[in-house]
Length: 410
Ligand SMILES: Nc1nc2c(ncn2[C@@H]2O[C@H](COP(=O)(O)OP(=O)(O)OP(=O)(O)O)[C@@H](O)[C@H]2O)c(=O)[nH]1
Ligand SMILES: [Mg+2]
Image 1: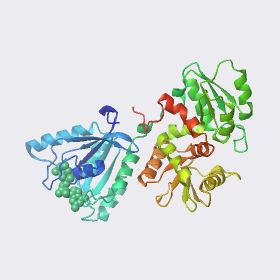
Image 2 (image 1 turned 90 degrees about the vertical axis):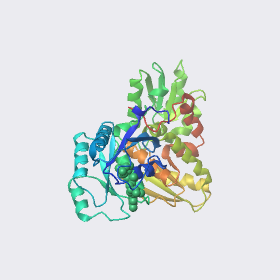
Image 3 (image 1 turned 180 degrees about the vertical axis):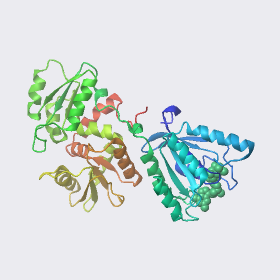
Image 4 (image 1 turned 90 degrees about the horizontal axis):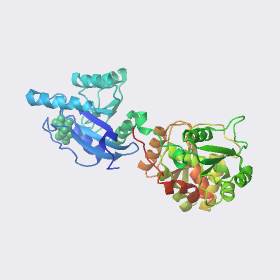
């Protein structure tokens, strides 16, 4: 990631008056002394750039700037440099002391708005003075997001990081191909689509539709079969398919019916790569084997659907986990748009495929799990793991080198 060209990194600019704590904030965010901090106003003269890997966004450049309120002939030059830095800023952090919001901050907010650069305010030095109510009201009235924090004590820093992620444009979370990169033009894929009780009436589900579209975009083609017909379909072909993709629920049968030299994966695993971070989710499955009786697992679903009798998240996965642990595993199910704040105490998070949320949202959830030190995996990976076929369904990504990118670049 350190080799990512600067032009392909998200640029996060830090702006504000002299002495507001911009350089201190930079140092906190990058976890090292990248910029000089001192009580003398005007310490930072030229913009300081620091490139780092900032999860879940990926490679970023932080730009620390000179105070916008600098004076004198040199001060005017510094101010100019600061204003130039705005031109290369994708996300801005406006730093001010808690009680000091005024004309300079309004000017910066105006400039950022004018250029449609997403930004939020850090009300810094909250350890000294709590943000006054009138300033909070004013920011709220203007629709400006703010976060009280202290770059000195570290208070509020996680929230500042979350706000950077929220402010980052959607385009920075553009996904890799769903499967087109696994399938050369002119080649055939077989899609195994069971039509069971869970299948919606008269339709096939979104990941399957998306796969068909992506195959066509690759100038490749596909055959869609139910699991029962797969063997027969394979037998009729005079050339092997380049890829077989099946629904997780029939992965065991599909793996048995597909000769080992034909690459096989599941729709869930394609979606895990498309929506999230394949490597982290695959890594999370390692915990399943180590589960013990009494452990707690969080089952997280992004949407609230009406559970079926044999529901995957509520019935099947808890049952498998209990079998692995050889005893009671407490599974808490949370469903809906909110990912729980408190994940401490969980040994593992098993997330749904996330078909109803976007990549940015899914990556944020994975990031929160990582930050909380809780391994995370998803339904499709768990099913493949407990059925003993995870290495097989992950193999297509390992041999093509197409395994995972946490982000694609514009
Ligand atoms: N109490 C307290 N002091 C802080 C905080 N953040 C920064 N400071 C102090 O404020 C002073 C200025 O901090 P800097 O980080 O250099 O501020 P800056 O905005 O980069 O200043 P210039 O480079 O001069 O524009 C230093 O003495 C810091 O130690 C904070 O959250 N709380
Ligand atoms: Mg500074």
